[in-house]
Length: 102
Image (cartoon, rainbow, N blue to C red; front, top):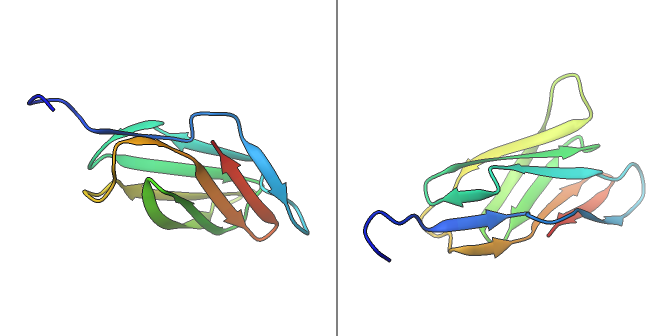
């Protein structure tokens, strides 16, 4: 890489797909930003989810915490040096099921 170029990890750029279990299933995963340089902060919001975990091959598992007054959960983390450039799916595991955003 040339000096000044950022190594970028792209997370969850496609449409969501759902694999439902018992109970209300998570409905949507929103990742911001979708392209993140190493050391950059990522926020994930999962709608119709009251907690659980979110994970991807591009970052370690993170705990989803309920958003006050709503039916969504969120996680925020920083991409560390162990993250590798590429495009990765993001999967949320919630009490009612699992949802993957390709």
